[in-house]
Figure 1 (tube, rainbow, N blue to C red):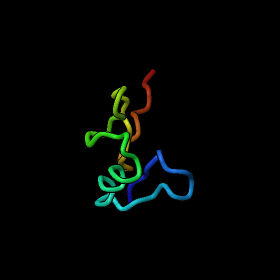
Figure 2: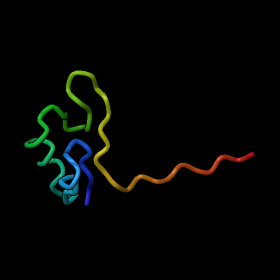
Figure 3: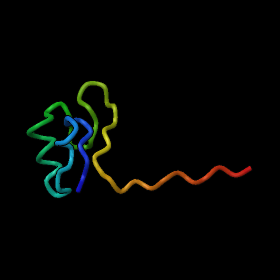
Length: 57
């Protein structure tokens, strides 16, 4: 599953293989590369991001 943070809570989870179609139909302001049309701000569509490493002293 993938999370669409552009959707309201409770309706954010979508199958990963359907996310591109979801973005095209539900959020047409988003380009295929995951940026918002007009200002190029990034929109994260995946849920497999890794945690940042712990800082060292």
